[in-house]
Image 1 (cartoon, rainbow, N blue to C red):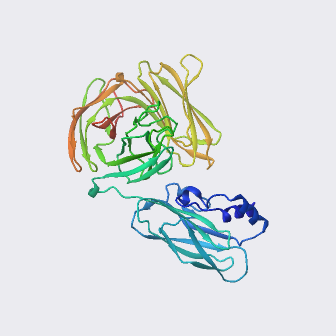
Image 2: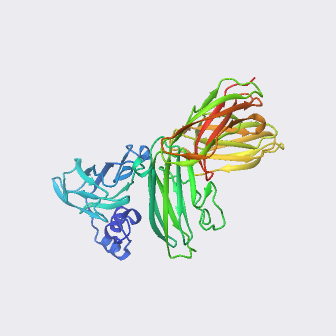
Image 3: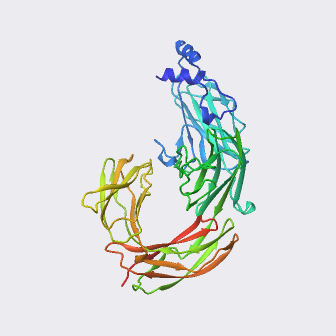
Length: 487
């Protein structure tokens, strides 16, 4: 098997104009690989290790944040050079120092190194690679140590930072071909309250899809979802041309732009405009130790806009009754949580996430047991542990939430669980604010009241949310209100 793998990789034809990260060693040449295999060539074995920078690097085995090739998805800026140091170890061949040529394929000048390396037998050697991407985007190349088995992929993602100088807004102009895709990358620092993405295109039928720094998609990639013009599925979570994610994960986000195979334009020019919004609502959470049923509690909220300018206002909402826990689950386990939902609730939601084992895949099923028999009412079963099910206008009575430990690489993992039912009959958070331009660095104060109308139930608390809503309806910030007890 090793000989077959070496024959295929060593004879592959690299395709010009296609990134190394897209094609690997190149196009499979069956005839050349077959002849190489017949030659019975046995190149010496060389192992490689090098630090990597990605939010998932901690899951790498056997050593966290160390891979077999350079992969820096985080921390790379156009025009800022740095050095990565490989550790190379030759594990077969002659028992003497031997010099080998080093070759780069698909390199656009981002990677520079010595043209050869001397490798003794079974002794690790440091090999430096200078990395200097000149432009934003993906830069990749294949590193080969000639005459050995070593062939590694090297990829970095260079990203221009949001800054005061660009008003915390970045615009990318490009074009995408029919039935093709391209990507824009933006770096979200810790503490940002929202990432707003807008797309403009005058022709064709295209869409954008957002992937967080761990690679988890925020938008469905079904064949008709979120296209502009609409392809039939609409666009959940916003519109085809504008969507906002609140409290985005810090790191480099990918915004993939795709042209539909039925697009009326062969090539579609587009502009992606990304805005980093940093708002702060204080206090957060607003904790009220005790409230009297039916008596409004006067509150005051300070709101600050620290990053991109926008037009918007602070709005209140309805109170809900929430329960929280942090259980532990193992692979194959099924956990069931019983919830009694009162009459008149406008929604019931169950949510899990934040697993201790970041590679865990947990699924959730919500059952309506109000008729006596438990009937499936909703499911959430993605490839991660971040799942949520919301039921509108739930029937009063017994509901059951089932958590399935589909795959837990660590064996067991703790995770966050919460459920909440919401109704105006439980109370409200009301504020007095109006739409206005919010310049970067501005602050304003909003008066409000919190009114509890019913007890939350045993083991539960009343909670509410304040939303900072932009003029187009997108939520660009939020904070919570917690009423610890009512009387």
